[in-house]
Image (cartoon, rainbow, N blue to C red; front, side):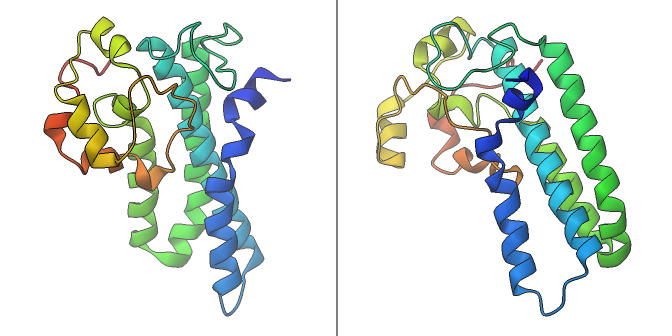
Length: 194
């Protein structure tokens, strides 16, 4: 399979498609060109998010040869981290182009949603997201410390130790959800950004 197609993680693209389809189904009238721009814009944001996740997980050491789950192209050596990040930026650029007619039609709120979505997609921070998808050993190798793993497990009501990270990147609006339980339970994140 083409490494770019693998990196786009086709199984996760429903996270972009379904909300647009529901919005279209609920609309009293559909402008098909606006619908298409919304659909492709959402797809490009999700693909860009997946690319960022693939490249940065590898750069941060979260994706190693011990990783379980679907192939991550950067970790597997199929594409370089820099190439995947360039692909992410191109994907976000295409999303922004798709957003222009949406902004013209819907105004500044659409611009805010688009900008926040792209920022969330590019600002995935191990201290916020990867705490429940990576083993404590990986954090220790990165110089990070999980202060209270049992309390985090109690807060999310499941075991989080040794999770494989096989989940996809969160949809853009959900990138910071793991801050909810208590930031004191998550790893320190001050020195983890590239």
